[in-house]
Length: 514
Image (tube, rainbow, N blue to C red; front, top):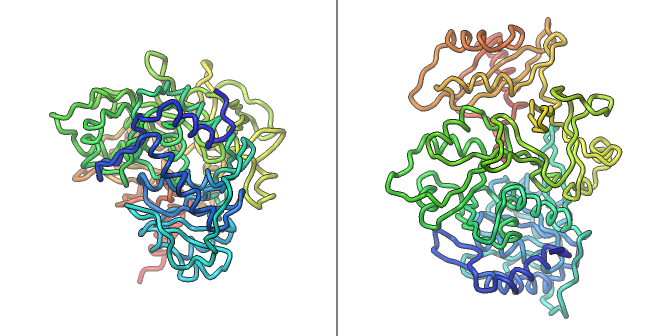
């Protein structure tokens, strides 16, 4: 079926799956059929239109996950708007900058989202707001728009923009990723194909929808495949397996941190989780040790995949059993083209590391108002991801790190992930991250940060001995630093750049004791 827009997709699903349950809230014990969901989103679309939001204008969505988040997202699309999901945990100063950068016309927020808004968020007479309530959607103070009725909702096509997501770059300045209806539909079809999703599948949505992984991989793909989405407000290790059992969930998408948390929290033996077909992991590299432990303990395959906001999410994935999955690999390209190229843009040989570049219908049309970033990222029709990796002889992609995170020690290039993987082989290690720090003699030196599992201890001598048995001498970290927690971005990824800053502060403290 060729859909003309995400709006067309929803209309099709309502016609074909009208009375089927589409979305469920486990905390509130509420469910919505496809028809009920459409009517709620359609009603909101008219409210949005009555706020004078025109086709192609951007609407911010600042709220926790939930049924109303999904209704609000689709209400924006049906009204012809462009959804701009923002993290409700952001500070007002962060939100203010993004509202201005995106030229927001309307804000949809729940009570958590309201706390994140700067006091003068509605000082712009061209910006209104709607409050997302658990029971209903109502206009709130701050709207200066007249509530005049609109004649009809606009027609939306594949090339029309649907989503603007902000992603942090190496400079720390957020870049706005523009994705069209066509981009997201292509991506949803790739996910459905790669994970063999059908209308019998039930996904547990535990990742925040203001990130591409949660929004497209779980919510939109559930709609595309005609399945069901179970949508808690947030991830809960305490209730996770209970939700799987009660709702007969068949799959979920997570990040490595969540898999690690689930390994630290035992599943109740009386819960039936036999419905679960697979777990999916993406957004950051999955240590092989965690993958193996999770599969061995819970008896389900863990499918590691690779994606990025600029591609609508997934660009490669390991296949489901009985096909071959390779630990440490992010799998095979699905739907789009992937190449690994050298510094001159030439295709790299098999087993040779280079930059990962991608091309396909799911790839962003560009960054919002950022010609410099667009020029740097798009070359000859390919999008340069900044990720480093290589293909093996079977066509499986292995990621080795970020181009700007590669450690250059006296001319020797060292992949942080390679060192991380060795550290994860130690059972006492909960999280590990290796960085390059400035060094007067070598240019950069290797330093590893380690977070131990609860109530575990690990001697530095043990770590060094293990590294010496697995790594060349120049790859072995000069220092190992134990920390209680890692600095992470809004998407949960470890911010290695901030670890370098942490190291610099420690060095300054040692050299200048109080």
